Image 1: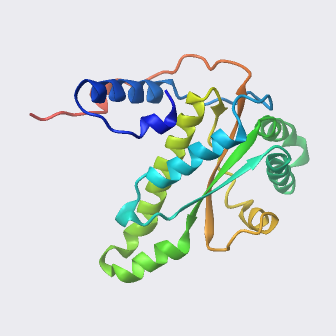
Image 2: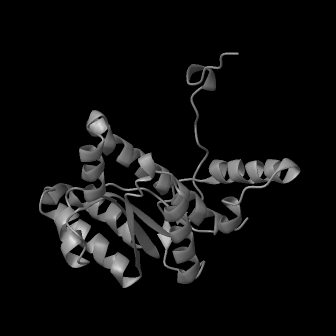
Length: 216
Protein backbone atom coordinates (compact mmCIF):
# COMPACT_ATOMS: atom_id res chain seq x y z
CA UNK A 1 0.00 0.00 0.00
CA UNK A 2 1.60 3.33 -1.02
CA UNK A 3 2.60 5.48 1.94
CA UNK A 4 0.67 8.42 0.51
CA UNK A 5 -2.49 6.37 1.00
CA UNK A 6 -1.56 5.32 4.52
CA UNK A 7 -2.02 8.88 5.76
CA UNK A 8 -5.37 9.34 3.98
CA UNK A 9 -8.38 8.76 6.23
CA UNK A 10 -11.59 7.09 5.00
CA UNK A 11 -14.88 6.11 6.57
CA UNK A 12 -16.82 2.90 7.17
CA UNK A 13 -15.44 -0.21 5.47
CA UNK A 14 -12.58 1.72 3.87
CA UNK A 15 -11.51 2.98 7.31
CA UNK A 16 -11.36 -0.62 8.57
CA UNK A 17 -9.26 -1.55 5.55
CA UNK A 18 -6.96 1.37 6.31
CA UNK A 19 -6.51 0.25 9.92
CA UNK A 20 -5.85 -3.34 8.84
CA UNK A 21 -3.19 -2.20 6.36
CA UNK A 22 -1.65 0.16 8.89
CA UNK A 23 -1.37 -2.48 11.62
CA UNK A 24 0.02 -4.97 9.12
CA UNK A 25 2.75 -2.49 8.27
CA UNK A 26 3.48 -2.01 11.98
CA UNK A 27 3.73 -5.79 12.49
CA UNK A 28 6.00 -6.28 9.49
CA UNK A 29 8.57 -3.65 10.49
CA UNK A 30 11.81 -5.26 11.63
CA UNK A 31 15.45 -4.39 12.24
CA UNK A 32 17.67 -5.23 9.28
CA UNK A 33 21.43 -5.21 9.82
CA UNK A 34 22.33 -6.91 6.53
CA UNK A 35 21.98 -4.32 3.76
CA UNK A 36 23.20 -3.81 0.22
CA UNK A 37 23.45 -0.82 -2.11
CA UNK A 38 21.17 -2.40 -4.74
CA UNK A 39 18.47 0.01 -5.95
CA UNK A 40 15.05 -0.98 -4.61
CA UNK A 41 13.16 2.29 -5.02
CA UNK A 42 14.03 5.65 -6.58
CA UNK A 43 15.58 8.50 -4.64
CA UNK A 44 12.55 10.57 -5.58
CA UNK A 45 10.23 8.08 -3.89
CA UNK A 46 12.34 8.08 -0.75
CA UNK A 47 12.26 11.88 -0.72
CA UNK A 48 8.46 11.77 -1.06
CA UNK A 49 8.17 9.38 1.89
CA UNK A 50 10.40 11.49 4.11
CA UNK A 51 8.63 14.72 3.18
CA UNK A 52 5.19 13.31 3.95
CA UNK A 53 6.40 11.75 7.21
CA UNK A 54 7.94 15.01 8.41
CA UNK A 55 4.82 16.94 7.42
CA UNK A 56 2.26 14.68 9.06
CA UNK A 57 3.96 13.17 12.13
CA UNK A 58 2.57 14.94 15.22
CA UNK A 59 4.63 17.12 17.54
CA UNK A 60 3.89 18.74 20.90
CA UNK A 61 2.17 22.13 20.54
CA UNK A 62 2.47 21.54 16.79
CA UNK A 63 6.06 22.69 17.23
CA UNK A 64 7.27 20.93 14.05
CA UNK A 65 10.77 20.81 15.55
CA UNK A 66 11.91 17.79 13.52
CA UNK A 67 14.71 18.24 11.01
CA UNK A 68 15.84 15.44 8.69
CA UNK A 69 18.83 14.93 6.42
CA UNK A 70 18.88 12.04 3.94
CA UNK A 71 22.27 10.87 2.68
CA UNK A 72 22.47 8.77 -0.48
CA UNK A 73 25.38 6.77 -1.88
CA UNK A 74 28.79 8.32 -1.25
CA UNK A 75 27.31 10.83 1.18
CA UNK A 76 26.06 7.96 3.34
CA UNK A 77 29.45 6.24 3.05
CA UNK A 78 31.05 9.44 4.31
CA UNK A 79 28.87 9.40 7.44
CA UNK A 80 29.85 5.87 8.39
CA UNK A 81 33.52 6.58 7.71
CA UNK A 82 33.24 9.52 10.09
CA UNK A 83 31.62 7.26 12.66
CA UNK A 84 34.25 4.55 12.24
CA UNK A 85 37.19 6.92 12.55
CA UNK A 86 35.60 8.63 15.56
CA UNK A 87 35.24 5.30 17.33
CA UNK A 88 38.73 4.22 16.32
CA UNK A 89 40.08 7.02 18.53
CA UNK A 90 38.32 5.77 21.65
CA UNK A 91 38.05 1.97 21.24
CA UNK A 92 41.22 0.01 22.08
CA UNK A 93 42.88 -1.29 18.91
CA UNK A 94 42.72 -4.90 20.10
CA UNK A 95 38.94 -4.59 20.50
CA UNK A 96 38.20 -2.56 17.39
CA UNK A 97 37.55 -5.34 14.85
CA UNK A 98 33.94 -6.08 15.95
CA UNK A 99 33.18 -2.34 16.04
CA UNK A 100 34.60 -1.86 12.55
CA UNK A 101 32.59 -4.80 11.23
CA UNK A 102 29.39 -3.36 12.70
CA UNK A 103 29.98 0.11 11.26
CA UNK A 104 30.86 -1.36 7.87
CA UNK A 105 27.53 -3.20 7.86
CA UNK A 106 25.69 0.10 8.29
CA UNK A 107 27.78 1.68 5.55
CA UNK A 108 26.98 -1.17 3.18
CA UNK A 109 23.45 0.16 2.70
CA UNK A 110 22.01 2.46 0.06
CA UNK A 111 21.58 5.51 2.29
CA UNK A 112 21.07 6.89 5.78
CA UNK A 113 18.41 9.09 7.36
CA UNK A 114 19.65 11.49 10.01
CA UNK A 115 17.10 12.71 12.56
CA UNK A 116 17.55 16.05 14.30
CA UNK A 117 15.53 18.26 16.64
CA UNK A 118 15.82 22.03 16.29
CA UNK A 119 16.74 23.29 19.75
CA UNK A 120 15.76 26.84 18.83
CA UNK A 121 12.15 25.70 18.58
CA UNK A 122 12.38 23.82 21.87
CA UNK A 123 13.90 26.81 23.67
CA UNK A 124 11.26 29.19 22.27
CA UNK A 125 8.51 26.96 23.64
CA UNK A 126 10.26 26.77 27.00
CA UNK A 127 10.32 30.55 27.19
CA UNK A 128 6.73 30.90 26.00
CA UNK A 129 5.27 28.24 28.28
CA UNK A 130 7.50 28.36 31.36
CA UNK A 131 5.26 26.03 33.39
CA UNK A 132 6.09 23.20 30.96
CA UNK A 133 9.73 24.15 30.36
CA UNK A 134 11.18 20.90 31.69
CA UNK A 135 8.86 18.83 29.51
CA UNK A 136 9.62 20.30 26.10
CA UNK A 137 12.93 18.45 25.59
CA UNK A 138 11.15 15.21 26.56
CA UNK A 139 8.26 15.91 24.20
CA UNK A 140 10.73 16.81 21.47
CA UNK A 141 12.38 13.39 21.78
CA UNK A 142 9.01 11.67 21.82
CA UNK A 143 8.03 13.44 18.61
CA UNK A 144 11.33 12.42 17.02
CA UNK A 145 10.69 8.83 18.04
CA UNK A 146 7.32 8.88 16.28
CA UNK A 147 8.92 10.28 13.14
CA UNK A 148 11.63 7.63 13.21
CA UNK A 149 9.00 4.92 13.43
CA UNK A 150 6.91 6.38 10.61
CA UNK A 151 9.86 6.63 8.22
CA UNK A 152 11.23 3.23 9.25
CA UNK A 153 7.88 1.53 8.63
CA UNK A 154 7.24 3.40 5.39
CA UNK A 155 10.66 2.51 3.97
CA UNK A 156 10.06 -1.14 4.74
CA UNK A 157 6.73 -1.01 2.89
CA UNK A 158 8.75 -0.02 -0.18
CA UNK A 159 10.95 -3.12 0.13
CA UNK A 160 13.80 -1.51 2.03
CA UNK A 161 15.34 -2.67 5.28
CA UNK A 162 16.55 -0.33 8.01
CA UNK A 163 17.82 -0.15 11.58
CA UNK A 164 18.08 2.62 14.15
CA UNK A 165 21.49 3.66 15.48
CA UNK A 166 22.69 6.21 18.03
CA UNK A 167 26.29 7.32 17.62
CA UNK A 168 25.40 10.78 18.84
CA UNK A 169 26.76 12.83 20.50
CA UNK A 170 30.16 11.41 19.48
CA UNK A 171 29.72 12.37 15.83
CA UNK A 172 27.50 15.45 16.23
CA UNK A 173 30.11 18.13 15.68
CA UNK A 174 31.73 16.55 12.63
CA UNK A 175 28.35 15.78 11.05
CA UNK A 176 27.30 19.41 11.44
CA UNK A 177 30.56 20.63 9.94
CA UNK A 178 30.63 18.14 7.07
CA UNK A 179 27.15 18.95 5.82
CA UNK A 180 27.11 22.60 6.95
CA UNK A 181 24.13 22.14 9.26
CA UNK A 182 22.87 24.69 11.80
CA UNK A 183 24.41 24.29 15.24
CA UNK A 184 20.89 24.39 16.71
CA UNK A 185 20.07 21.07 15.05
CA UNK A 186 20.65 18.34 17.66
CA UNK A 187 21.37 14.91 16.18
CA UNK A 188 19.03 12.31 17.68
CA UNK A 189 19.45 9.13 15.62
CA UNK A 190 20.82 7.59 12.45
CA UNK A 191 18.87 5.15 10.24
CA UNK A 192 20.90 3.23 7.63
CA UNK A 193 18.71 1.67 4.95
CA UNK A 194 19.09 -0.47 1.85
CA UNK A 195 18.07 -3.72 0.23
CA UNK A 196 17.86 -6.46 2.89
CA UNK A 197 20.40 -9.24 2.43
CA UNK A 198 18.80 -11.65 4.90
CA UNK A 199 15.54 -12.17 6.78
CA UNK A 200 15.55 -11.58 10.55
CA UNK A 201 14.61 -14.47 12.79
CA UNK A 202 11.39 -14.73 14.75
CA UNK A 203 10.82 -11.97 17.28
CA UNK A 204 10.09 -12.86 20.89
CA UNK A 205 7.35 -11.07 22.79
CA UNK A 206 6.69 -10.71 26.48
CA UNK A 207 3.14 -11.62 27.58
CA UNK A 208 0.75 -8.77 26.88
CA UNK A 209 -1.07 -9.51 30.12
CA UNK A 210 1.95 -8.16 31.99
CA UNK A 211 2.24 -5.07 29.80
CA UNK A 212 -1.31 -3.90 29.10
CA UNK A 213 -4.34 -3.30 31.33
CA UNK A 214 -7.93 -2.59 30.28
CA UNK A 215 -10.61 -1.13 32.53
CA UNK A 216 -14.27 -1.13 31.46
